[in-house]
Amino acid sequence: MKISCKEASCICDKSQYKEASFWDIVKLRFHLLYCKVCRGYSKKNGELTSLCDRAGLTMLSDDDKKKMKRELEEKL
Image: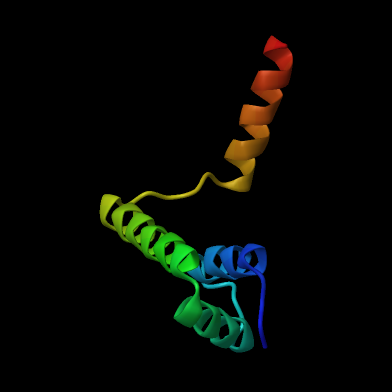
């Protein structure tokens, strides 16, 4: 049940994007009970997610990413 801080940060990042499993979230919450550093990281991660949601930020589409990659490669 006990996880490392590295694994906790990974699960925290996954949960930010709704990619963490139920069991991962349970393990993370248990870890946060005794780890002050990870609690702070988790709190900051939640604040970042909230700010991004309020700002209405969106991700690039796959086509836009490919186009950007081509343009960068041409300039190199």
